[in-house]
Image (cartoon, rainbow, N blue to C red; front, top):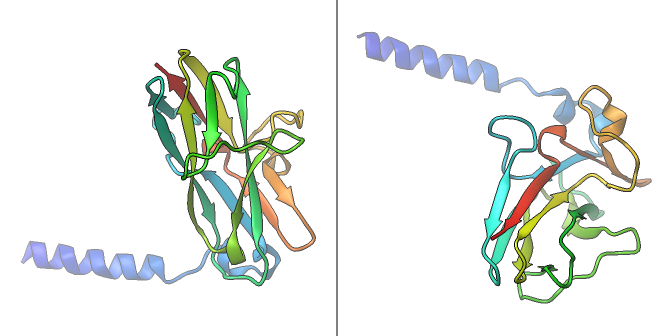
Length: 179
């Protein structure tokens, strides 16, 4: 009897808590605001995820795009690489077919999210023959902004006339370790 009562209360509690919408999905002022970040979330502290790749091998690192609506426009998000290893020599950023990608003039690589549909796309890192580490991040390292969860203006990632993309402070960067 206790098990049945517990199960019944659990179902009722879940139903009651899942009925309400949050501000992001119900506030018209927020309906063209999207979020992006690495799919893996922190374990011990913010931004502590490390991907390890052996020399000469490739690792897929997922970036997630959060959206609750399908739109008539596409949304572009960016990611950047920083660190002491040299892109093109010590590692390459490649697409799913193995073609080497080149960043834009600001050092950004991009993903396009067709019709703003939520999902996950992978950054593919092909390691060279030198051991070391570097960082992938959704925050522009050249912006001069220190990312903080205390100031929402630091999380703006990309803003156009149609939409705004923000990053999560808890998972805006990951470390890639080449062994």
